[in-house]
Length: 488
Image (cartoon, rainbow, N blue to C red; front, top):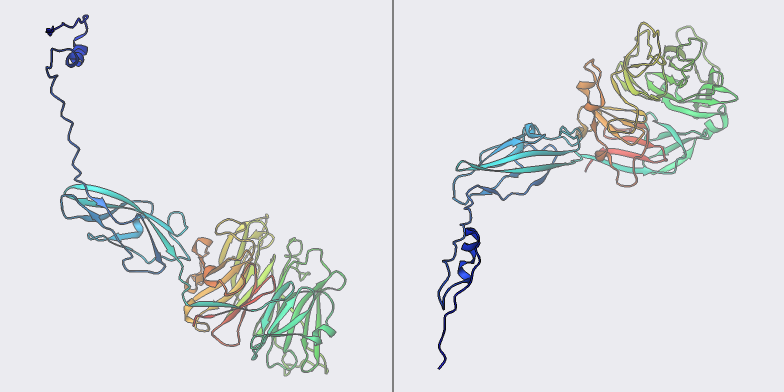
């Protein structure tokens, strides 16, 4: 029988720490090693945890709770909520139960978040049993069209420069730069050329158009400003129904004729551009000037014009205009839009009987001085914004319409205008007339409110009133006409 023999281990001298590790591998027959170690216990979570999401969206003008913060607490302690941080924290109010709202209803058209992009960021905190959890919440504001509807009602006009409503009719007069005047009837969509103007006008590009002097036998008709390299600058008037026409030569041809604007406000007013600035302060030139054609008084001793003649004449009443882009009538006042070329665009409000009237060009472009020794008295702008392509900048202001009791409720009491880059803006009427200068950071961007059913308003040219008080029109440079009206 074999005899079991115990053979001792031979161990070289080793450090005590290593010996402790090896002790279990060197022992006698069948003996157990050291006792197993006990793992450390996992930490117990006691802090609250958010269960509500970190993003929300809400329609503009919302005043009530739009988001409710929720959280759980492992120990079942009561949870309270607070706004603690974030670039837009001051825009929010939260109650202890987590109901979150804006302290002032948000305005999509005039955002007040830190990035001005209608995304508000706020930090929320949940507290339970003295412990806390934090959540960063992003709130996106969505647009509400606020009762505005826009329909495309016409296409196909070629290089249109201006349009005007015709008194007591639904028709619109559309002027194409080439020299055509077209009559558009929104009621049936028909478009016809005004052949009386075609056959009787002095040739030239049309710069502006207006229908003026309704009910005045010797003045009522369609007025246009034209320019050609051969004939020069003219104010022309036509009334095909009674066969009358008239002309007033305003100036010689110009290498830079610029733009022009006309408005009928009891009398007829015109603005002639002078982009180069060489004639805007020259009293002997009509370029860069504000013009007025007054009412012809048949009882004032003037000779009655012969058959076929329309009284057409204008006097200079103001200067310093660079590149006019429309008028807006407002009782005894007129608003004149003037496009800048490098610095600022501007809108100036003035009474029709103010004298002198000097809009500053070329000594000022908007509010910025561009030349030394300006005139002593300048009619400064009411609105001004930067020339450029960035946010709150533009390529050219376009005069719009004053919305008050004459138009629909959805727009409120506002002034609506545009830029040639496609932006449509508004500003409260009370702000517009407060006597102070206002910048683009105060303009509401209404572009999405004016998105049409078909097509797009890419580069507005002009606004025109409709025949009734519940709509108006926008003419786009690509030949489209849009009707703006209350949403049904």
